[in-house]
Structure formats: structure tokens, C-alpha cells
Length: 415
Image (tube, rainbow, N blue to C red; front, side, top):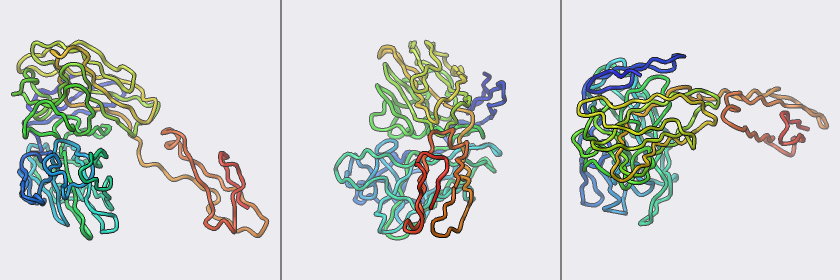
């Protein structure tokens, strides 16, 4: 593997089969500022106020300081203790700089809504430089309001691709509501990727931001489940104290025995994938890193620090997916004195796309009393590649026609 040396880098590789895509980036620092909305909070109920680094919005809610919300009244925070809210319709936006014109990026964010389904609707449209990229309609809260009880149901997540037309632009979340509805946002990031990247949420660990501070995370790290002592750090921190950070500002760390893992979906069984990531060790540390897809070990090594100013180690591992999803895990197994650093995690290969429709033959039939017709349903191969397909066949009026074939039959006969 070859890496492109720059202040903000993305892997550039060549490999047999042409599965990898190369990209070169410039500049330094995170694209999105205050991505997890931890910077400011108005203690006066109901916590309306400006949002640092953002335009618009209505305020920030912090359930660790006010369990009642009131706007964040359901769902588990994806990252940190705070989420932004936009009551009623309008925009939440931020000016983004440091992009490369022509480069493909992902806007990633987590979202939810306050308000009962009977009280109206909530839609979110993602825009860049005034161009609509994606719309989510009919958003419902992830769970019923739980008052002071623990909230464990996660927010929804979204990853929206776009090609930058200039090096700067306005990222906008436009909210459209009917009735008493409020949109909730958290863990907003932008990351450069190629057209054959499989979706990984928060792959460069930028979603937490640097406020109120870097270090161990005890509540939530967007996209990742952790065990042991883990968190994020910058080049000026005590964990990422050597090497040149591969992408943007932050890297993840695992200190002592622990792990970071994420479930990755929409894989195509039987297809080869290439896992890429950057790794390092804190100074005076020699951690042992094990990378797994479910229980299968993909990569394992002891790590030496790269030293001040040097690029991180990188790894490229090819494997074949046996199911349509995997749990990708980074595990550090040595003592509490050892710290591993991880950044810029990528999985390249084919993603299961939208499925073509089933073929129904015949598409219609007219029957006299006592007559039968055999209807064939052909399930697309793309669906079968993702696992067993179940189909329910029933007439709109069972008093007129009834299926008589076995449920497991490829054909259904109506009489």
C-alpha cells in the first residue's frame, strides 16, 4: 500500500482487480466544527439558544443536565451528552471549507424527532450549496418518551454522498414539519470516500469533536460500540502523541484490554472485500492489535510507535463475505499500559443495491367459478444472495379466490 503524503490524507492504493479507488486530499482540521453539539447549552428551560459554529437551529438539549428534554425526549444520544434541535420548519447549516472540487464525500449524521405520529409530520432534506442531496420523509420518533427512565433506543443514521463542486460550501439540513414536530440532530461529519466504499459510520472518528475535550468516552461514540477504556484524541493529546494523523483531527484509541466494533450491513455473500485502516501505538507502548470480521481474524500484530511526524502504519486485508453483514472489531489485548490508535477505516467492494421487483406470471387472470390458475413468483437472485426469501400470497377478497398450494411451493395456485 502506498499513502499520499499531505496534511489531510486518504489512502491511495493499487490492487489486482481494480477494487480500490485513489483519492488525494489537502489541508488540515475537521470539515465540520462542533459536530456533536457539545460546545454550548443554555441552562434556561426549554434551552432555546444559538448553536456554536452553526446557523439556524433552535437550541441544544442535554439529558445529563435536564432529563426532561423537553425537545430531546426520546432516543439514545449517538455521541456525547447533547443534541441539537430545530423546532418547526427551517434550516440548520454550517459553512464548510477545505474540500477538494470533484471529490466524492459522505455527509453522515444521526437524527430523530420529537412529536407523536398523530400530531403531524417531519421531513429532513440534506443540501450542499443549495442543491438537494437527499430527503427523509415521514420521520417518526425512535421510541415513546420515557421521562426520567434510561433511554436505550438509538437515533436513526444517514450517510449521504455528494461530489464537491467547490472547495467551500454550505451544508444545510432543511426541516419541514406539519404540526408540533421537532427535528433532532447529532454527530454530523463529512468524510472523503470513493464510489466503491461500503458505508461505515464515523470511519475517521471525527463525530465527537474536541469540545468539551478529548480523551476517554464513557457514554457514546458515534457508530461504534466500545469495551474497556476507549475514546478519541488529537495530535496534541496524551494518547495520539506521535505520528501524523491520517485524516482530519481525531483518531480513536483503546487503552489496555478493550475493543471498538461496528456492524456493517448490505454486503453481498461470496464477494471479496478489502479492509483498509491506519494504526499506530502511543509512545513507549507496544499494543497487540487484532482485527476481526465476526469471529474470523483478518489481521493481527504487535505495534511499535511510528515516531514524531511519521505516517501511521497502514493495512490492507482482503476477505470474502459469507453473510450480508459482519461485526468489524478492533481489539487490543495487552495490559493497561498499552494503547493502540486507529483511524480512517474503509471497506471497499460491492454493496447490495436496490432489489429489482419480483416477476409475477401471469400478472392478471379472469376465472369462472371452479376454475384455477397457477401464479409463478420469481424472486430476484440479488435477494436470494442476501438470505432466505419469504413471500406471502393472499387475495384481496378471500371470499372470491383462495390459494391452495403449499406455502413453500414456488408456485401458488388460486381457485
